[in-house]
Image (spheres, rainbow, N blue to C red):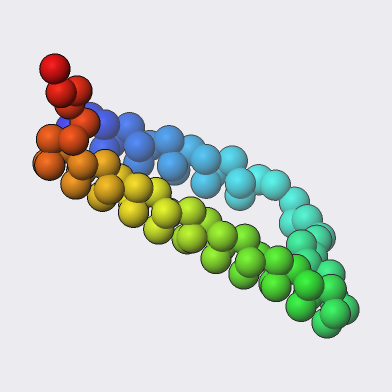
Length: 79
């Protein structure tokens, strides 16, 4: 375990030392500067994450339903 931690620290320091030698690059804006485009992007991100959370809720409900059916023994065929 100590070997793994020391290896991670060593790789981290090597990566940082490589970054020190690079020249400063100009900042590129990821999101547009106009407010209407910013609102559109943030709105779409909010809808996206609400959708992801909704899917997680649906999956959790389905898993609970499967567990309930298995507890009741309804998943076994009656012979």
